[in-house]
Image 1 (tube, rainbow, N blue to C red):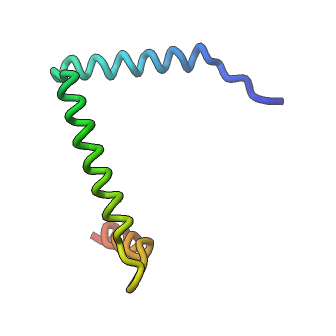
Image 2 (cartoon, rainbow, N blue to C red):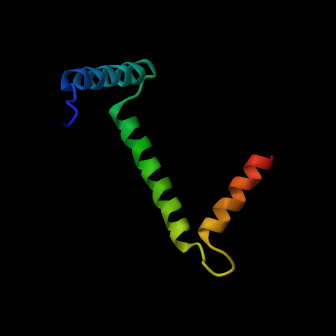
Image 3 (spheres, helix red, strand yellow):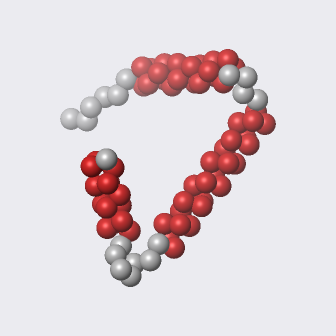
Length: 77
């Protein structure tokens, strides 16, 4: 039997989250233009990261090997 999800509860959580995010933005003095600028900046950084990941060579190792090596370094430090 499928589990019944209480949509009213989820709707209330979503409204609370939106209210909280709006309150924080208001308190920090965020403007729509500032938020749009920040989102464009994040998009640019994500695109740069994606391009760097795609350009990472498979010769001499792989991206997975590099990530494992970096993870090990972070754990040991």
